[in-house]
Length: 375
Image (cartoon, rainbow, N blue to C red):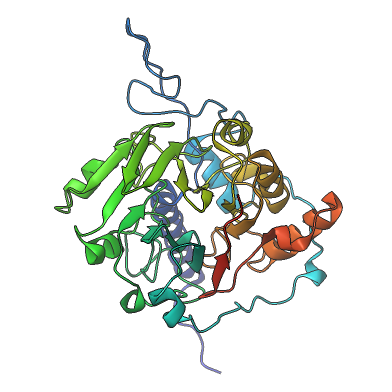
């Protein structure tokens, strides 16, 4: 047997260096991926008081995280220094993750019925929404990694459900916030300046650096238009940042899309909060909602910036949604729940609430759903 010539102390030192580099890389990625919770900046108090979610340096949540903030909690998460949690679904009831993929119906995608709502899941929080004669991309991410690096960071577990080359001409792109799993630079560069972009406050500058100027930048509850379709920027319980030094300088949001075929709600990325009831009261009910159901464990770390399927179901009820689709799961592995657990957890929550399983569903990658308009 060949003996290892490297002394044990040197092997230990090398392992520690690799570990330190891994932690440093994770912290950098966490700052731009929505993993590390954020604190609240000092609020502004001028003579004309701005909206409550505005701060001296950017924005804040009105329902802040009171449990933990910043880098310290991320280190605790990485090192496992937190109380163990009982999973909602016993591990033996969660089979090995095998993404359900279908061949996209390109004929349907290229020739949608303008009198219906048509939705295709690309993956994670990326959708192709076709309604009112418009082709709208929601948080499109086509890169192999949700990361500023091509060699590191969360990697796709499954390819995009629809190839970029197979997309129809895009009229509008809706962005919820600037984390790497929702705002992808290579994808935006490929889309270029042809679509109209709808983004939260502060995000337009990022687009300007790419030479893209067809951008409508909105604050919470502000409206804009594309043709006869109305887009309203609405609150979400989350945060923003693409690096460790610009926390919450840009706003995060969900979006309501008002069409002849009914109102549509895209929640973006959010933890559960009273925002949902307010959105439902002011702008609901909704014909279709897209609500996040993944990246929730350990709850000690991810609450309240993300929500589990039971909380997503409550959000579905709060906003008054007739039909909802789960998103933000199964594409990038960034939390400790099994990748295939969210749909199982969602079905459990529906059963316990006494609601039919076809009221809140998950889609297959590449699948297209067509909804008839119901007044």
